[in-house]
Length: 373
Image 1: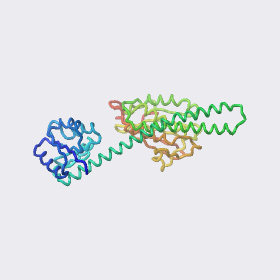
Image 2: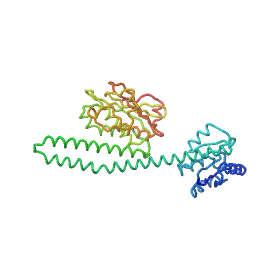
Image 3: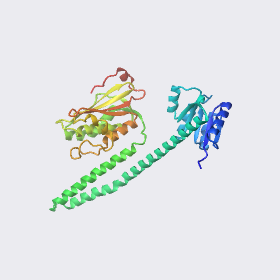
Image 4: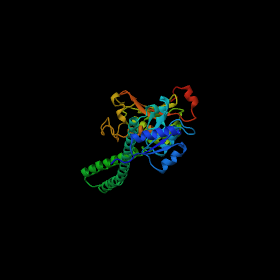
């Protein structure tokens, strides 16, 4: 036997509350229907008891339906909320959906059947969203726990492989030493892959965003990559002055470091070179990371951000196949975008678009154009 539905309707008009109560009762026989006249009391009512769906009149004094919807959505991410309006208005509908409303209906369209459909649809959609989120969270927790538990046995394999290799020094056993070398390298690759998987799961948590000085970010990246640049006899060119952007400094350092390392790694030039520059685009900044590497064919320029996709064999270029996936997740978490432009043989350009810093860099954005390298 289906559970008895609990429905709440908010309207400051006694006549409208009466009409809605009768219509809801006809649409859902046996349902517990609670009419409320004061919007200010609804939050407490919903805290005290649960409802399958809440219907809010838009035009109410003191607190309109959208304001109330925002409060209810902040308290309950999966509560079905339906906005009831006197007239259809595209601007209002768009604002309602941004405010967390599940659906809307105009009073002229209210019938027993229309309410049955819209309330039933909202309840079903909310239930599905809750299940999906719970499954996603469960999978993330499992992946995190699994990756974490892998770390200890991997470290033991690496450590004991090295200890056995040390014990065999001076002993004529080239085959065993070679096999131990393979074992150690495989364990080290697995260790790095587990680290990447941990990063992947952790990036599903929303980061704290603030104004970030790109000059400071690039200085940190340059210092971190100095040994690699010296080893590869490579060039890293940063702009003389870079903008302030809105993002997360730690994530942005990781992303740019990853893109620069890729530009040096997938590179057969005599002098590998990666150049970073920035240009303004309205209320955003686009950071370009340009290299003189092997490049990426057009058909792969969106595919490269997918997990574990590799365009080259491990023998050609080592790597986990998750670097660009992590970069994309990190940029999306900062409310930005990332894309690639490339011609094979002529290098690649990775573009990272981020919002301009709040209250900063207005003069630069008005001038437009590209910051000097």
